Amino acid sequence: MTLRAELLQAPLTGLKGLSVDVAESDGLEYSFLLKLRGAAAGAMHTFRFKPAGPGPLELPFADFVPMLRGRPAPQPQPPLNLERVEAIALQADGNTGQKEGPFSLTIRSMAGIPGSHVAPEPPARTTRWTCAACGTMNFKTSSVCTRCGESPAGLEAKRIAKAKAAAEIGAKPKKWTCTGCGAVNFPTFTECHKCGALKG
Image (cartoon, rainbow, N blue to C red):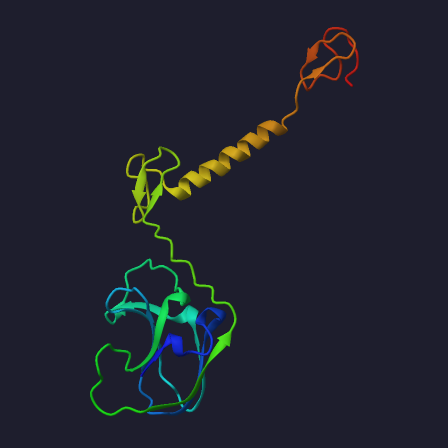
């Protein structure tokens, strides 16, 4: 079954998904397909489901998976653009070819779910990391730098230790200047070593 987008009562851009009312099901797996205008041959977004019985079923657009010729499309993929949807199709068994044998799925109605569809961002491809010690770029699988042997965890521990040492140095008592004669005295002196004036 295929429904052209221009035959819909409202555009898909104002919806966050579809809701179908299943009247009867044979318990097999089915797929709703979103076919995009200008997409490569065999490319579509798919929502696979297996109705447990009669009743409503929600199909959030965020859960539609990009497929290419019946298999998950290589990642990353651009977000689903509802403005480019040219047809909605229903297919048995989630395969691109016709399933052999009888099947039966009766849908009483299909409606849109009002709301905003915000497509998830494609996952970031973190394949390398840069050593903070020497600047060498390493593969993600390397636990230590291939050039200097430092590990991210080791560098972080050194950074924390260095910051702690600097804080301790900054907390040490400083020398004081005599207000009477201007002489500089060690922190432990309670009176000026030059004129004998008391500290403070």
